[in-house]
Amino acid sequence: MDAAVSLQNVHKVYNGMSVVNDLSLQIKSGEVFGLLGPNGAGKSTTIRMVTTLTQPTDGHLVVAGYDVCRQQLAVRRQIGVVLQQTSVDGDLSVWENMEFHGRMHHIPNPQRRQAIDRWLDYVELADRRDDKVKTLSGGMKRRLQIARALLHNPKILFLDEPTVGLDPQTRRRLWEIIQGLNQQGMTMLLTTHYMEEVEYLCDRIGILDQGKLIELGTLDQLRQRHGEGIVMTQRGDRWDYSFFPTLEAANAHLDQQPDKTGMMTRPSNLEDIFVELTGRNLD
Ligand code: ADP
Image (cartoon, rainbow, N blue to C red):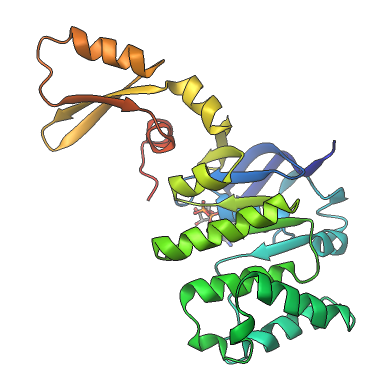
């Protein structure tokens, strides 16, 4: 099966600085792919390139079978985009925001009205349709952004940090919405800082650092590669982490220590792997 999103040897240079450096990546149809990386790693730039908002300096990008550089309009018809900056218009009502977007995409009536009703219903904003957007909570605004991005029936949805700044309960509701869309066949690429978000939503993960893809795979594959067990050792006010192939191996190592003070074992998680690879925390 063709990849829904394909990047081959993609580069982006800003002012002589290589921001995305030889990135090659394929996202399968129906997959939820999570792109992780510290601030400045090039995640947003990558999303901006695959969504036609900025041109790559070099390389080949194909989205839904269309060349991103030469067939921009065709790509835009196939994708929905939820970026942090592309916020909804606070002085318009929920419905007016949807209507405006639908007209921009030349969705004819009565499909436009039907699609607005369907997606507002899906994100549970039907009862707020006449309210000005500035009266909505952060989570509601994000749901409206998602509903709006879905209006023209895209095949692939791009979400840049979809739940940043939202409380845990609202975040969880958004995860359910995102997961529900995926179960309906939607392919998704999302960036996030939240490990639980990746664990809940993503089939595969790519870790970007300084514009380079430094890790790629399922969470299980990453844990197998780096070690499924961790020995933590307290040194003053910080912890040292050592990876072991399995939790049993980590436990065996701990058992051999004459002095186990300040030491403990646990299964490894994505955050451990992220810190190991990038030297930085996820948040
Ligand atoms: P991330 O989303 O992973 O935090 P970004 O893609 O936003 O990273 O940024 C990667 C690097 O590219 C940063 O060093 C940032 O300053 C730089 N950058 C992003 N956009 C521009 C731009 N329009 N002009 C110049 N530099 C940019």
